[in-house]
Length: 281
Image (cartoon, rainbow, N blue to C red; front, side, top):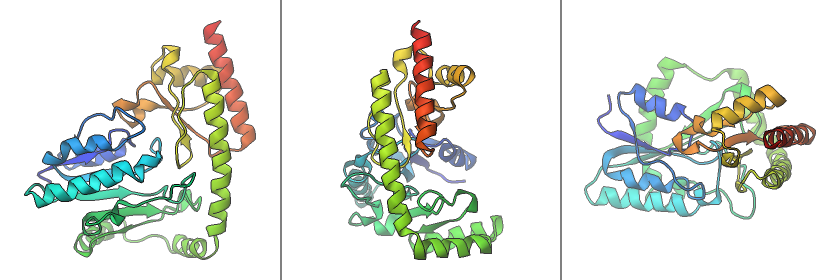
């Protein structure tokens, strides 16, 4: 059992919270109130945590502030907290969407912040940037003493990644970087299509800075996130994810993936508009 709580971004994939609870502890922190600064609320719980989990990008959203304001602030606060006699905080940074950044701002790892390399574990994989979801291959980088203990657990739980997946990953690393650039250009176009269309429908939606999801507000419909998703599914056969699936701060929002063809997205948007029109009528 761990003796300290773990600070987790309250707008993230729920399995992060459940894994901590399996260790007999609970996630610490306060609900995220601003989707422009999705990680800063973690600073409120530094006094009570052993580790922070910073999920940078895509679950369900990613903003440019992930790379600059909030990441730098968390790094600075973690260092100062430790130097002042507080908990020696370790940061687990999920950077699976690192290559999928739009605009001029490049991805920045918290491990790049001064003093954070020795207290950061970066996890990444091949499922997003290289579209290798089914190959189930990832990796971690961090301080050697911690990785040695992680390797012990991994060896007895999983043993090793399949050989075929490893060869596929080597091929991807050698020859597929140009494909990533092309894919990001396509995602960027689809992102702008969805953001513009949803805003025109009256579903307020900001423009994410990475990954391949948008997170529009559905509060104007008077429905909860779950009600909106269920009614849309049954009436128009369009599947979206309720925002509260990513934590209580996501209520009033839904997540829509744009990892589909433009034709599919246009049809989905047409059906969402029909659904909204029927509710008004």
